[in-house]
Amino acid sequence: MVANGECRLNVNINDLRKKSPQRVTGLLNAAHEELPAFHRALKEYVSSVDTNYAKTQEELFVGFEGSFGSKHVSPRTLNARHLGNLVCVEGIVTRFVGKT
Image (cartoon, rainbow, N blue to C red; front, side):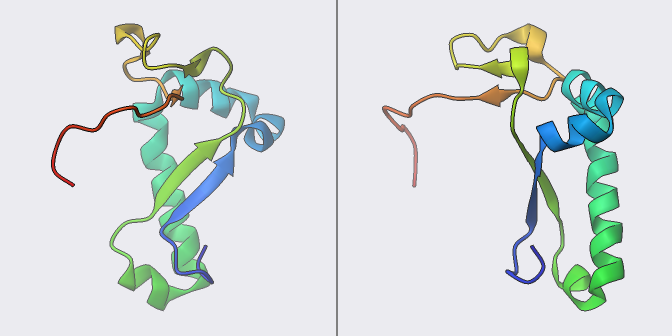
């Protein structure tokens, strides 16, 4: 990530699940509590690896990939019970209305 000049680190949930299943459960069910901890840890780690890069990047982000289980939804199945959860929404954009 640092070598490529990117600001997003993609984490595979399956790898995280092997190390800490409780953390993944908390992440999927209460993302609003867990995500800030991931962002802080990434910022601290990048700061320890390359301080100049950490200063030039205002924000660093964590993206997730892998098996979301029941949290893998389509736009039609996404509803209010998913509020506060980390979900993977997969669909096809057929029309975009707005400014580009």
